[in-house]
Image 1 (cartoon, rainbow, N blue to C red):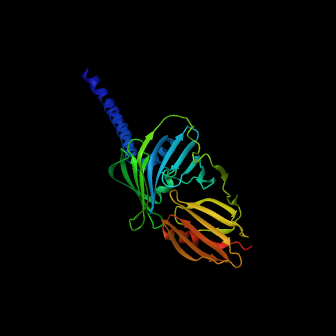
Image 2 (cartoon, helix red, strand yellow):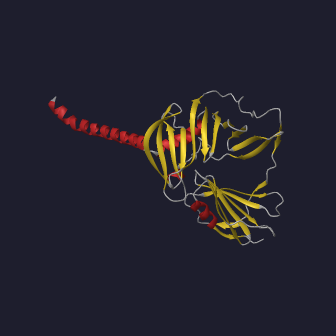
Image 3 (cartoon, rainbow, N blue to C red):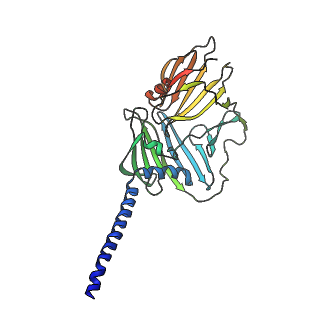
Length: 332
């Protein structure tokens, strides 16, 4: 009996070591996954798009303060949202996927405008946060209650001078961003939004997905510029700020201008910057210099008879570098 036990003991010993080794590996893997802070950002990015919720948040951009109601539904195939401004003049927006329709009332009519949906609160994070990892560091701090829910505070701190710092309050249960603030290089808050009430729902009813802005008025489409997706290499753009890439490029006619305007949109996943380039008509005065309007910077210059203008809610260094990224302009 003892010989048998002694003979089998080494096998049990190695088996035990194997089981312990596998267990430690799995525990280590789970621990790494649980401790990886970026997983919380991935959860937040998905929560804003995949959850169905309704709430009211306070939005502030410098002196502009508004209460906004949002209803968001994901039916498993598409996203639907209705955004209603509760203060001042009635204003609504309906979005389906990346397309948004805005309803603005005037004295006699309701003007309808179409635009692209660009990461509106609480969906401010890109679906894929890999690009964010390269340009921001992540830091967890305290916990706090927002809108009656427990939230984890997270800082997205920029690695360079070309972007702002983000402070996020993530719902501890679902990951949804309950509050956010954007800070400039002097730590001044330039933009913020915070839910004061938020509730999740599971219904698939879309009866709410319609405008309710003075139904007695006539709804008419606003005269939008004639946009055309451009494949023309009008100018060479190189050396953009790290992390920024071209999202779109269109040409449009603006009013009675004889020359089309080229419009590019660049993004690093969190911020969006517009670049406009057009020939300066004879007799028209060009613009040069830097202007700040609220949290947005505008940088204008002239190159080879073309007006170059860059606009975005980004640091001044960003719009200047994007403007200077234009290497040459096609001669007509």
